[in-house]
Length: 305
Image (tube, rainbow, N blue to C red; front, side, top):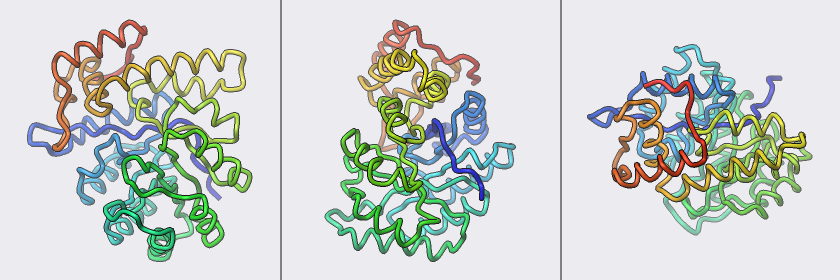
């Protein structure tokens, strides 16, 4: 049995060319930089602008990462879509490439759907992919999807598919929910990843497996350092440092803000580009963001254009 993915993962931001097509070369380079800083790749997450990418674009980018020599055991691509068949196609593709897991949003267009409906969605995906290597990580981000993943749903899925339902990313921002999930399922081998490094230390102390965090895109080494040293005397101090940087980014639109930071430190202005309906931060916002980060002593060493 292959070892489960753990540690810090980044929902990798996706660079775009002038024509708004994915910049594959720059994407691969960014992923290699993250892996070099001990961060895994939750490509096609929220901060990847994944739902602005077609299924074919995601599949091509994933193939390019593998062809570039990046270990798929370090990858947890997002494969959850509104269309069941898209979810199946993306998930089967990720499994075939050897990815460690699939990070799976619930189908999010219809609101007020029942646990029964969500159960059927995930069950269909498991049955249709029909591969014992499949490891699903349920993606709970109710403030965005308006479709929460309840503890009762997790319990039912775990009972039906214990080999395939591997864990969750809890991006609710509600520590009480994360703690309840840990208390209910961590002892049974269900891997819980808070969706922010804000809860990394608390999560690890309660049996979590790491975190999957937006700002791992820009602060990977420091976040991994806390993961590596969470049982040390300096852990609380390290957490406080991470919270300070996170707080700066949260003052700005997160995705355009992170891209602006990467554009600044890489020296490549094109990194700031986002796909509609998102828009870039203004020049004034970008300047203020960089200044705020400078006051934290923040940098992105080793980043290349």
